[in-house]
Amino acid sequence: MEVTNNSYTNYTQQSSITKIEEVKGVSFASMIGTEEEMVEETIGDYVAYMDKHGGFDLLSEENQAVFKEILKDDEVTIDEIDSLSYEEAKLFHKYALYPETLSEEEINNAPIVNMTSQIGSMFFTTQTTNDDTFNEALYRTVREVNDDNIRRDITNEVSINLAQVHFGSDLMASYTNGAYTNTPNLWAEDVEKMNINFDNFLADVLNFHEEVIDNPEMSSDTKERSQELLDGYNIILKHYYDIKTEINEYA
Image (cartoon, rainbow, N blue to C red):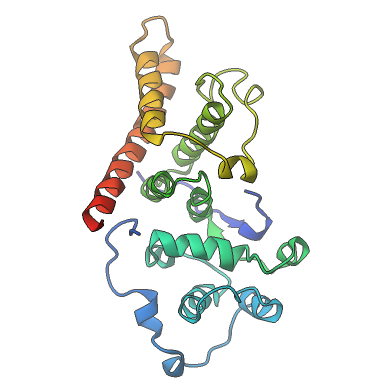
């Protein structure tokens, strides 16, 4: 699949230990070297603003150097994100784009950081649930799916299915009438309290869409939409068990 939309988004205005893939070349940490070796460069508006307000104060010196190198041009590219591990991407999102040391007003007044919608979605996945294995599987999926529309449909479906399970509702596809109006939103406090067995969650959702596809009474359009979502969930499932295998290997 090819990227169909290269539009940029202002991430500062949005609400919402393993690599994504084998990264070729060197990491940002090795590229920039020690602080003494760094050539002084003009920093962008965002880094200057965060330095002024202590936005990076909770980060280690090494992470500060890496993240400032990425942000120095007020832009985040997919190659730069690919240079980070999932754990580093979590830190980047939490402490470099939404620093806990800044007030809501200071964050809202921060200069624009440009990035594609794909990158914004990747950052969002790091806080989708309270289970890092599932989040990283979703993170890898969002990186893998380059079609903006398909990627959006997958992440929307995951969000609404998680809410349904969390609040004890029956599973319902997002394309079904009333799916959104009958499902409460998941807020940060809900994510913190999630008690979901993600092995069962994935199995149940896959089974749901397989039953829709096999049902002769369902329209071809409905089956096609469920097939697209099933394909998306199968990508998540693959990454989910790949990550669990990797964790066991390093245990």
